[in-house]
Image 1 (tube, one colour):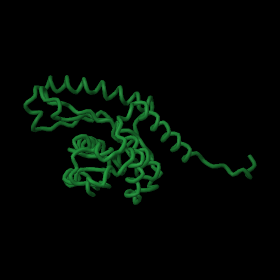
Image 2 (cartoon, rainbow, N blue to C red; image 1 turned 90 degrees about the horizontal axis):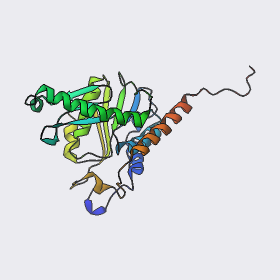
Image 3 (cartoon, rainbow, N blue to C red; image 1 turned 60 degrees about the vertical axis):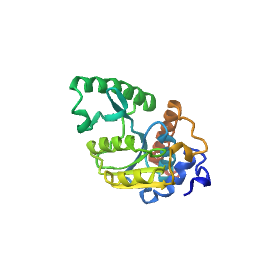
Image 4 (cartoon, one colour; image 1 turned 90 degrees about the vertical axis):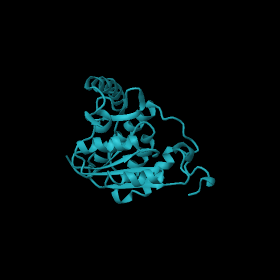
Length: 232
């Protein structure tokens, strides 16, 4: 796709529907669940889960910034109490500094989880096929951290799925997941936001509301249907 053609997606919801069309082999499978990376990945993941008729949940990942170079990730923590460290970077950091960084980010992770799902526990990924969704991939750092965390949580199969991404990042991601679905890989890529007409920041409130809607819809699907002709 040529950059001169303009943004292919109106917004994240439309991008999610476009992505879902590429994920139809996973539709209505009882072992499949969709996890969205907050915040921007949730509107995309909501549309994917609705189209595939599978459960949706949020998977919160917090980067552990290297001291003095906070944008450089020496590791990450994620939903489920998982901690992943980059051994090469973390070996130069004193353990107490790592622990302090983990504790700080853990508070923010827990705050977001409470805001997003309330008291509802996270969905169990053990033995499941997980479709991990974000609104796009530039470097893929958050996606890689989430994948590492899901491996620790014993997901049986991990699918990384995004509407738009840099081709090189998609190729590199194939080394750590079971399937990669990058619906659009424009060149030159430059940045995720360039490929959306509306790339406004997704709010915590929107994330929480979409998760509530998905939970209600999943519950409605599971609700047994009673034949009106039956006599109690």
